[in-house]
Length: 314
Image 1 (cartoon, rainbow, N blue to C red):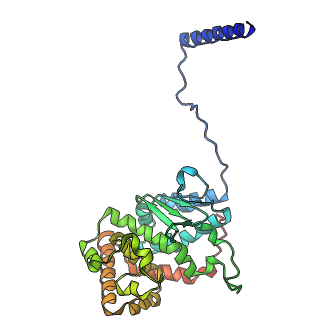
Image 2: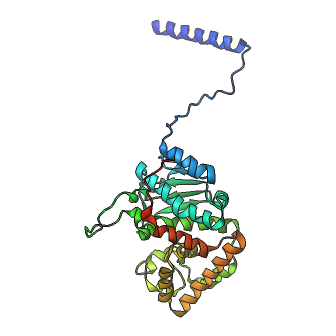
Image 3: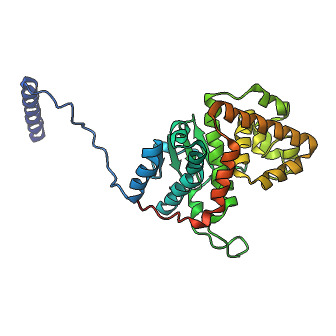
């Protein structure tokens, strides 16, 4: 009986409160949200990103872990603060600053680069043995993985002293900047299609998902003989377009020439034809000189040791 009395008393009290609320003339304050967001205190990297990414380019670089922003198809870990700083500095120095130099202002990156960059600490391993280092989502977001590879690595696999990854241009390109330029390349043809002539150069030689098992290695001469600059370029015409653009920009002239030399007469002609189409596409549709862009990227990569990529002072 005691329990029943308590319940009846509570119901009576609740009814009284409801009546009082309904009879009140006061309106709820629509300017006050009933949901309180958890706010993370601003730090030095946040302030540096605001000054160097958001204000000039309207680009947001996300380094904090947010489940709804990270792929659930892989086992992934967050990027560390130290390596997030290094990636932010490297991306601006090698990529953004190069485009600014060639186009004459920050407007090109501001208007065309994806608006979000999500950093992840490790790479994604696929069932076919390949590794995912990055991806693009509809031209508005780039997912950049394996950022923790930027940590100090003073020894190679043979325990020989080596430079940190941040001063190794070949490692930076293989792990990050080839992927970044590649994904950026997709945003252009998604807005303005390239000519159908590009698709016809290689014709029926695109392999789709079979590309991972077709070649003996990433430098198999058969890749170049078929008219592709990389094995992944053989996946589809869109990937071929992005790979041709990215490889040309990230390679030194000597490195790109080596690929041409391995291609043989027929393969070399196909690669050069595709490169001509890509060069004309960017010149005619985006007023971008990819030869000047390559020169700017290569000059910065040759000067890596003069930079302090741990410094985010304003």
